[in-house]
Length: 175
Image (cartoon, one colour):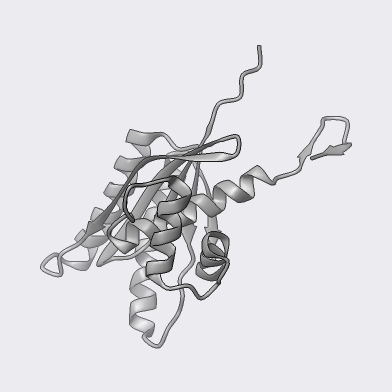
């Protein structure tokens, strides 16, 4: 009997000061929330300790919740190059934790994530939170916003995975 198991997706909203994560399962047309959370690192810690904290948190989440794939938001480079650099380092620490665990890591642009959950690539954090609440059938919007963003990343990756065309061993495609 070839029973298909639900796909478990880890979404990550990277950051050094604050990073969010969320794990969902997709089985058929619906999504189920497994868990979500966030990590804040103190500016009292040195830079390398903060990066290590991000790495260890992602490693813990991967070990505890055993996702099948990880999706991480790409960096939006605003006006502050220093912020983009530091966020990129935290992103790398997250990607490394997933890669070391053998996970495939998919990178998604913030506008693609917002478009995927709200229909608007420039949606506000509040709009994203409200739609994540609705999609996952939660009693209230997930907080903090970084965790809601991470859940949105996971949802969009799950949607993309569901639409993937399968190819049979003979080379003929199916959908």
